[in-house]
Image (cartoon, rainbow, N blue to C red; front, side):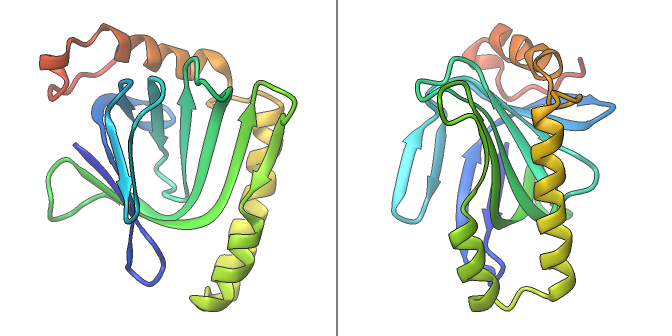
Length: 180
């Protein structure tokens, strides 16, 4: 399956090859084993560590949790707009990347809201509506607080359950859906 991001002006952004893992009370979970492809114009690489991503029903963020990431990034939350399963393409999740990210690293960097400079530039360049700006700025602050408090689904136990499920897949099984 594919998780495909675009920018507000509909230009292409990140595309991640993933496997659907299942759903729980928090939303749908997809995973990326180490080495699976992520690419955007001008950049292409394999996942540095196994990771799982939660797509909540709200469609306003995607929570990615890494296991044993070489740069110590445990949580990376992309704030987004209209993140949902495609209505026309099977096994594709679509979303608009809205620049702001909430990041938790298990090193001296700690927890922070990232890409504020890109946010400031793009909200003018793309003409983000003022209500969208206000909603996402408040959401970033709330997500930072919830990650810092380790509230579910931002706690280790919730994501580790899905990371453990991702680890049991054999490469040939990666296209099969399962519910955990």
